[in-house]
Image (tube, rainbow over all chains, first blue to last red; front, top):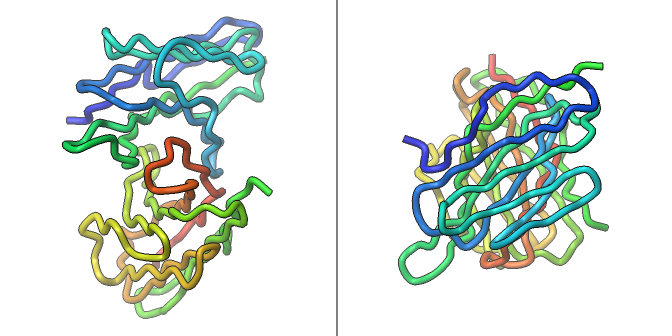
Amino acid sequence: KNEVEQSPQNLTAQEGEFITINCSYSVGISALHWLQQHPGGGIVSLFMLSSGKKKHGRLIATINIQEKHSSLHITASHPRDSAVYICAVRFFDGGGATNKLIFGTGTLLAVQP
Amino acid sequence: DTEVTQTPKHLVMGMTNKKSLKCEQHMGHRAMYWYKQKAKKPPELMFVYSYEKLSINESVPSRFSPECPNSSLLNLHLHALQPEDSALYLCASSHMWTSKTQYFGPGTRLLVL
């Protein structure tokens, strides 16, 4: 069972719509990453969060440590936002945080014009 | 220069071939990683190098042989691969093993015939 769960697995939206992707994890973490992967391409790091909220352009990421939950929001979505969005976490591992990333299963987003 | 580069972008090889994947970064990062990603699956960690020494081997078969000749370069030598090894191979780096942010390369898409 994956310790990092994402929802939805697939999402289709119309251009301009507000999009939310969710990520839940099972144990304490030191950091959570939101990553973007275009088809056939490498991975781009969007955000790294350990608390609160971050904003970059049309992207907003929030994390609730108590609820073990994070969301990625895209405002005014555009077809170029179409990609796989991956949540990845760094768990606390015994003596301290580890840099091993545990990845969620990803959310495939398609934004139609 | 905030880029991780990988060559080649695509590779097709037979099961008896020997080939190598190359990853390079010039950000002064001292930790480098190899991940394997099958289609529609999240990346899986294979190896971690910290200060040019192998720190983690995630029980990867010996037909995959990593090498870190210097702090900027990471190779993955391939020999006697199986068709199920076909995947996207991603390289990443971070300032140190304990750093929170990893920078990913574009990946090498490998097809084993």
